[in-house]
Length: 392
Ligand SMILES: *Cc1c(COP(=O)(O)O)cnc(C)c1O
Image (cartoon, rainbow, N blue to C red):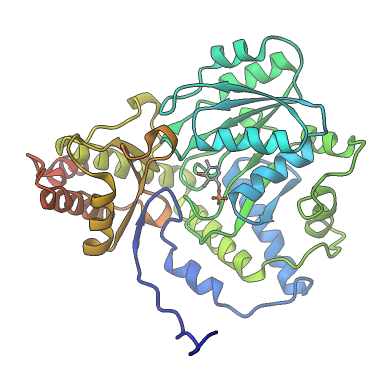
């Protein structure tokens, strides 16, 4: 029984420097609180069209079937897989972290015959290893993670397209942590299906998943002989709401879409290349600062993902105690490791509005303080090393 009605919420304004959610830009918060329109209101239809146009630019595509799905990044993942896979289809997945593992699992649940090409966590997937795992033959789909947030690895897409061609496969790319932080060029790269999420580099709260399907993927969708197993994620119906028919499928999350509209606007106002440069600069400064403090990156320099830096927890330092200290004393959230990286890795996000000098310096100072509190004070100040990067 409830004795008293809970008070209205007043959550702390945390500095979010984990693997997501990332900080929400102030104008995105404002957009979220604007008056809710009906999902078929002519004014709202304009908002939808603007979102689709902006999303195409931010994802580097002219694909007709481009729009946000209602749900988080995983809903976008599931949308791509359940719409493209029919039971018995062969699917090859590059697995080098949590999200490749998840794609393989979702594909299996959709009835695919899944081949997982597993490679070391913290490294990019080697196209040669993928080809070997495929063992020849035709595949329906090759699935790869562009930005593996669980390990901080950025994957080169071009060799994946080459391999997909050899296998006769469509290429599916997880762009959850790249869209909005790095230039994503789906058309140029030859990606057939891709999904992202609002709460990483787009700087919007979790709740929507921008997706895009190429003409080839759309053909595969129309050529299906069985209905898509998920009613909610069935693109053949959802496309009729986002397209000219405007037929009701489910009530669009109106205010979340306002938030995405503003978040996409901010990306375009800043410019995609400028935004990528900003993410790269602050990540370089962060890494320099961490290295000065004796905290080593987990990923080789050529494979690092600027929006998410994975580092080894130094010997003698206790992961959980440091992260609690950061939250309690500095109002700062960073991420721990997952899978084989649990307990030995920190994941530090610089995403969207959070990719700024203030956050880099806060994180370096706070880590210094937390390690000192544990009796493992770093020999050097990270902020000085980061400052040297900013000074050029
Ligand atoms: C966060 C993330 C997802 C899943 O998104 P949710 O919003 O947590 O459902 C999928 N892939 C990658 C690479 C991610 O970083």
